[in-house]
Image (cartoon, rainbow, N blue to C red; front, top):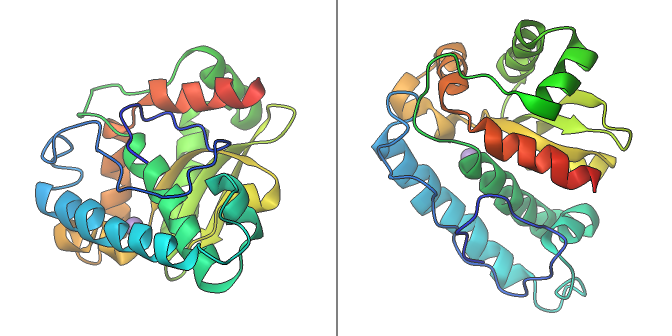
Length: 211
Ligand code: MN
């Protein structure tokens, strides 16, 4: 799959997966995420998950399904690698160069206010979910069928579609996501990510899932 638009429709079957193209230059997210980390995380880690997914898919009985359904139904190594491909495409697709006062607006902001009371409360709860996740995994903001929002912690390659939720935003807390830039200071890395979230992408995911 070649990604020119960061809003991916995961209900389309792909058969063969390709490394996504980043919607920004590798240094564009500095200092939150360095060029070196992007090079390794996108160019090496994600590439390995894509290669493993393509190797494990033939003969699984799931090769005609969209990625989202593979993530929901696969087991073992296929489940892990399919999950990591979907997780990382959503992660890398949700960023842009840093912006001051970077907050969502429109329907997504309304839903955040409704669910959490304020953006500040949402941010605090999301950051806490990411900071306290023990070991490797992901913090997620997702929508329920009725449009209400929910924060979950998913370990390893977990994705909220496995709980029947619609994933919108994610922070990767595997050490490979931040160790080169922040070493053990995971909270400092998480705090920096708020400046580079492309809220237009996240809101588009929210609006797309309501259709
Ligand atoms: Mn990662």
